[in-house]
Image (cartoon, rainbow, N blue to C red; front, side):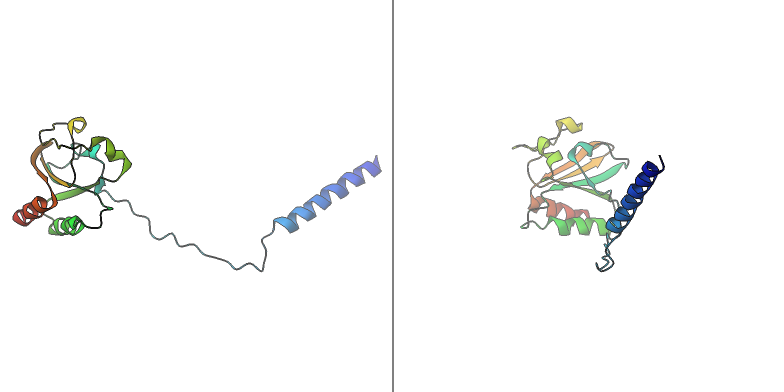
Length: 149
């Protein structure tokens, strides 16, 4: 019985020694630090399904493809947001959640998100959860923004 006890103790001691040596981190490996940066939540980008569900009485929703490098609408967004006259939301049309509401023809008379159809770059002016202005095309959006300021 004593021999069996010693064998079990030696076995457990050996396992403890092996795992403590093998599991320890190598002292010679350089430590690396990972900087994840600061985490922030943005509320200005929405999906098309949220166009009519914002809390403000009046706001603008600019829908455009953010991956399109030929568009100047990102500067338009910056201009509108820096003016602080009205809340501006953006919709990235290249996002997979928005693909279902893209169409060859826009619907300026939509009263709810399921009726909304977007055809390319579009600026929607919402007032009291209703579409007040529906502007399609980058040039028309730029002129609306210039007049709005």
